Image (cartoon, rainbow, N blue to C red; front, top):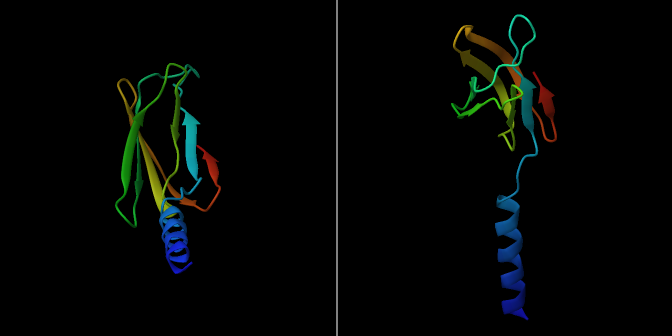
Length: 101
């Protein structure tokens, strides 16, 4: 019985550390004439922790960052040819947030 209890405690503690945050940021990148911009480079940085991740927009100009660390402030940077670089900052993530920028 003791061995079973110890194994159960190990399983519970291991799974609790592997949980995801369920917070995400997504959006659509478009140009001055509202045309979608595919393959734009989108980066996301948590200014407090230094966490950084990048992605490209798809053929509809859509990007998504899933399972992000909670907290902030986050800064999102978009770079694309013909439009240069743009930034938005000050976003904070809480459990379950789905922020659209």
